[in-house]
Image (cartoon, rainbow over all chains, first blue to last red; front, side, top):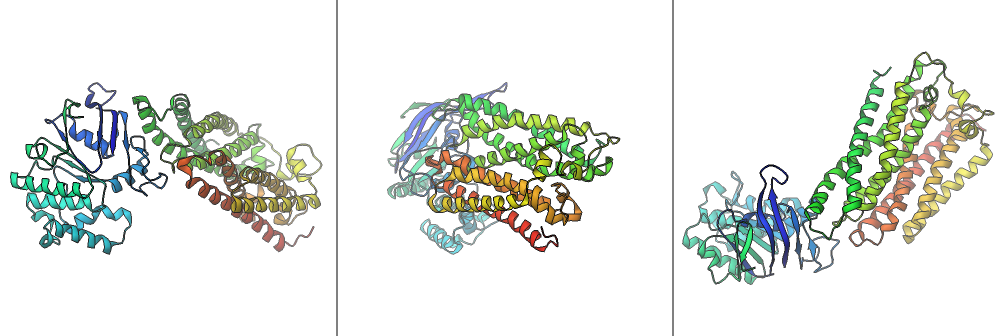
Length: 239
Length: 330
């Protein structure tokens, strides 16, 4: 479970034009469930995701990760909660790599290299045997219907295919939590529904899913266990 | 004389380190006063963000501080030709009353800076800043010492006058005179030799005990410091004679010269490195039960103990080889 306690994020704090993107948010994200953060542009959804995903630090407040798998940090007992906002960067890197898989709105695939290379990229710093990584990546791409594109350049993919590559990349390190920021923003309705079906499969496999969206296909989906509505940096419904 | 590259480098390094540590000292003061990891307040999170950068900068500054001791000795040795009567750094340091106090202050800050670096290294192995308070408490002790050392150094280096007559090392470290240098030189070799070997053996025994049983860290630290003092006394009273192949020359500074293969640098480097490692073992002991350091701290203590033993062994090996090969037999 991810527990947020009075989390605030202010950009340009201490300067003439401070902007508070997240304002005192307290909530919990349960394990193995699909949680949707809903709200208009500028409501603080993406900022909140970056804070939970250890890509930025809050201005104040704490975020705890419960039930981390054994071996995430050697100093932690299995199941012990970890407070992530105070973690030095070297530990944050480990947490980011092992705990979270990210699916970005723009997919953020590396142009000019192949689908397989994009998917295996996050494993490079782990030092894992490349053959086993490739075998895992190929299996994942096949399960996502991308078998024939494995060695193709990502520049040639359609929007839906590019997103599935991004999903395969997010899953390559077998993270416990999948974070997706506006994943259906560039997809048509059919592809958006396909995406949600995939998320449902991951939830059934025990993954924790946290998705931001203002797309009704996402937040009205029966697969969404919990919908949290945000506005002006605050939670206004469903905490 | 102030345009000498060594002097300029020393003054620049000293100024930089002093500025850096003074600013870091303020951060340390705030940490000792306000650090509360259970709080999610803006002030606490700002301290956490800032301490990472400040610690990294302080670590770099203290490495410079340690290296400046060797540069200081090298510069003092290089300047001896400017002063009438000086034959090595011993004479240069005696040119005015600030030379030897600067050297002593540099040695003290070198040891403390080394221990701080050990604490910092271990602190970064824990995810919850386990040694943040002791680390910054030690920094607050270091800051005035470094500032004192910087002031002494400025007084010494800016007070160097080429027309001053000074004493040569043979006079300063000659037997039958008054003062610490002379008394060290006058220590009888028949006593110092067994004392040195006893100190070395005690250090090895304490090290083996520590590595096997994980106990006796404080004793090992005390023996490391004792070995440093005994080794310096033995070097002056006994080993120098073999290195210079003269039964009356006891100067510990001539070892830094080309004629003697710059052997002083590895010897003093080994002694100081060994002492820092040994002191580091003891400095870490009170934090052995920190949960987040359960793996890193014993591993680091063992590594430091090995380093201290190896460096003591290196010192003994160098002086031993020199004694064996020297045509001088006492």
